[in-house]
Length: 263
Image 1 (cartoon, rainbow, N blue to C red):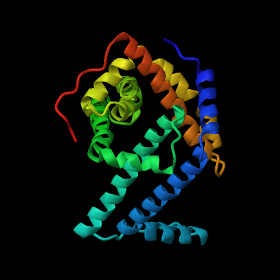
Image 2 (image 1 turned 120 degrees about the horizontal axis):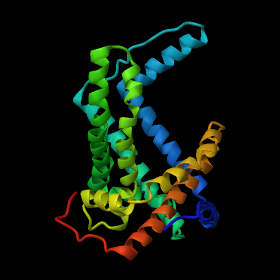
Image 3 (image 1 turned 120 degrees about the vertical axis):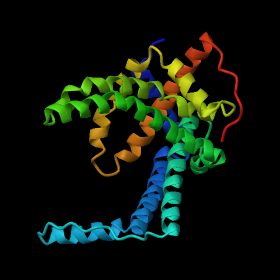
C-alpha cells in the first residue's frame, strides 16, 4: 500500500471543516490550559521569577543569570510532577480527539480529557517508547563519546552521526503505538509498540516524507495563531494515516491477542 499524500491531507482539511466546534477552538482551549500548567510549574520551581528577573535585566541592557529558587519541599515537587502528568494526559487526549475528528465522530472539547480514563496506560505509553529509544541512542552515544575521549575534540560526534539512523528508524516504527492503545484497549502497551513496529514495516520512509511535507506549515507557525490551524491539521492527517496503515495491516494479519491486563 502507498498513500496519496495530497488526498490524505485534503481529507484531513475536509474533516476539520465539518467538525463542530471547530478543532481550531479546541486547540486554542488546549493551548491555554497547557500554558497555564506550564506557568504554574515554572512558578513552583522558581524558574518563572528567575526568567522575569533576567528579562527585566535584558530590557535594561544587562546580561544577568539568576538561579531559580523554587520550593524544595516534597509537596512542591509532587505538585510540579502532577502538573507535568496532566500535560501528558491532555496531549495524549488530543491525539484521541484528532482520531475522532478524522473519523467524523462529532468530537468536542471534552474528548481531550478522555485520556484520563486510561490514566496509567497513557503515562506508560508516554514513557515506554522514550526508554526504548534511549537504548537505541546508546549505539551512537557510547562509540561517539569513547572516540571523543580518545582523540579529543568534538568532530567524533559529527562523524558518528550515521549511528543515529537505527534510532530514527525505530522511532518511526513506534509511531502508531499511541493510536493502537486507544483503538485496542485490550492490548498491552508493549503489544501496541510491537504491532506498530510490524505495521510500519515498509512504511517508515513513506511517513517520513509525510512529515517533511509539513515543513512549510511549521515555518509559518512562527506567525501568531497560525499554529492553531497547523496543530489540528497535522494531527488529523496523521490520524488518517494511521487508519490507512492499520486497514492495510489488518487485511494481512489479525491483531495479536491480549496478554494480561496492564495499567
